Amino acid sequence: VQLVESGGGLVQPGGSLRLSCTASGFTFSSATMSWYRQAPGKERDMVASIDSAGGATHVEDSVKGRFTISRDNAKNTVYLQMNSLKPEDTAVYYCKATRLVGFRTLEVWGQGTLVTVSS
Image 1 (cartoon, one colour):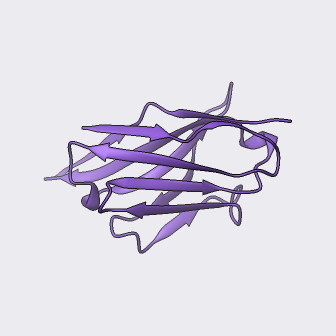
Image 2: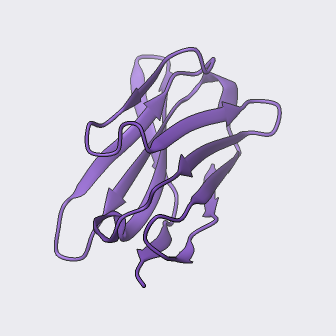
């Protein structure tokens, strides 16, 4: 069971990045997927989530209108499109899979990808 994020990097304010998170080892199409971020010295906070079919999404107010979450179940991948980036978006971004296995709720996290917004 593994999640691998990619797409992070250095971008100027106002720029865009698309993060990807590819899953393996479990039935991706059954999992709710989320993106979180953790800035230096701060707690890890959720940014966006998407249901297993991709029909329902939630985006936190702090990034609403700038970030979009989507998924491609055929590719076992969830995306986070980030536009109009600001320095305060600088953080390590993590994806998380949440799935029901029997009566248990299981979570798995990726290793994170660093996004730095700076001129």
